[in-house]
Length: 424
Image 1 (cartoon, one colour):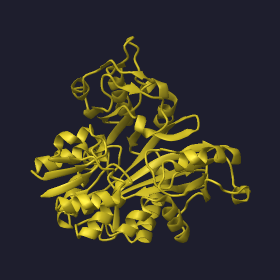
Image 2: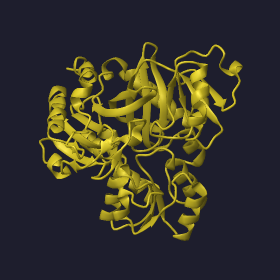
Image 3: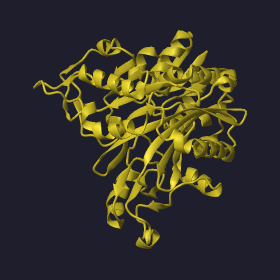
Image 4: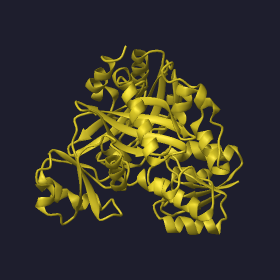
């Protein structure tokens, strides 16, 4: 079939490979001329995946028979609108897609349906002081329709909001930004699939994050299983089902991020996609199921084989899997450990470098600074962490002066120990 793929970055490579293996004709949309996915494309269109009208025109011109994205938020809206207009199969309609890609609509949905969420305001660049009078600080300022922690800032008071709001809005297509109360928390991600209106939770992972000053929520890794399943399992299931019911979701992938703190679970944001922490690779390892194959089938035919969902039990799962999303210190890349050497290490399922020799690495401000990933498995949590450490000990990103730019596991040892101490 002739399939249009929105996005040709590292998160879409597995999707592109799968379509190539199925002998599909690939029309790739990515505004970057040198995106990694271009090598798999029959036709590469340098169009923004956010530009819905341009994507619709291109889909018509090339008479595509299906449209799909994975691992990225905003193109889900583009794909849903295109599919709806051209009569192509897609798992959600455009109103639902808007609700899972726009935090303004998302927050309104949470409030109407009693889904636990944090206090918030919607503010324009020239907001009045009275609009945030009495609002609890610190707080988090976010674009309503961006991704990858772009334009997200922790602010300590009204002056911080005023100094940063134009930066935040520069990442948005809307004229108002979201100001949300800060919640001291652990983060978890719920991966699942809805079938006939019923949600199956496939995995719950601890989303370990770091902060760089006012830049917060930058994901370092996903650990499966989550330490919070013991205490919050029933609540996690209940909140997940409430969201699916509130949205009227019938089918498709679920990617929900929750915050857990003193007030229990708060829903951070929701998406309907396979996650951008390479869940297309990790979910088959964890569950034995193939959500990426299900997604491809759905956008080709309007249906998929969901029988495996009914046989799956998260409660009985005994896997231990870590996805490491590694970063580097600023500098110029002169030498990188060959990725094949990393993949050959024990219990490593996959590895990828997003940086190349000659690249200039900028300071970390959001998830776009990610230098790559690797995925490891262990027979226990302790062994999984041992495998992570072993990979880091064999991996280097050197600058011309032979300084290693890679930010290593040891730099976050206290964060990892926190999880190790809480999980047998």
